[in-house]
Length: 302
Image (cartoon, rainbow, N blue to C red; front, side):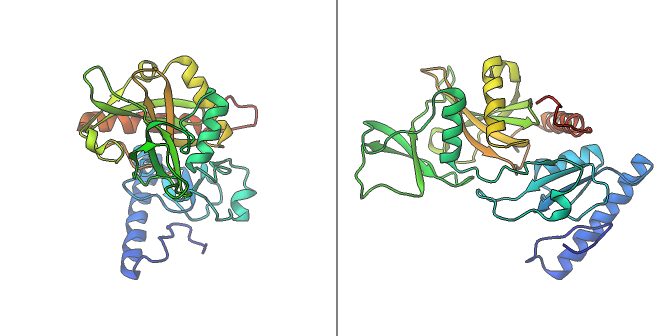
């Protein structure tokens, strides 16, 4: 990464002119944030990727008037591994690994569905996975990889010829409300706390996609029990997650909660929120970020 005290490092395939304007925009925003803070603003350094303007992290930094960059800073306020891959393979640079500043998600390097399943089983005592060769009835098959949104219903059991090694097989969770509408919970997890939750309603035909009919902010204490919050905290520690957004489903018949996805590089808040709730969501996340990013020690509570 080249030295650049005031800029960013756009993706390598970014055209030269676009790189210029991205860096120009960054400098203009940095000047504004310097004026707001009356000094150079806190630097939030991500690596290797630079979060897009659609990301939740970008919106949080704008609310806090923090500098967001993927270029080394001498005294960063916060560091984060930000790599939009299911399996993170890029080695962190020495300046990041050896920094006195904690690096969030440093060891969160594998968010495959099978890894998530093992953590869920260990913490909750149950999971989503089924033995596709012996399970009788409807089940869901989906990619091991994150953010594919390719789930589909199939009937079990299946044959060895039908089995896909790059997929997982799970129970068909009936995440419906009293009126029969399908909904997911999207939970914002920040350093041991869940400051924000959304309810995202979906049509039956698009329940496995990222398409929503509507969304709203949900009270965390109404969405989750205290015990479920503790189990999620345990699960995130097991997965080395400091910051992520989680997709969770509650089965209408059993009442059980299932955390089906962990996304450490989320976009958000959901576009289907009202303009007023968008503002509330971003400010809630910003407040939680600011509190969690205060000087940290190994004895700090999680």
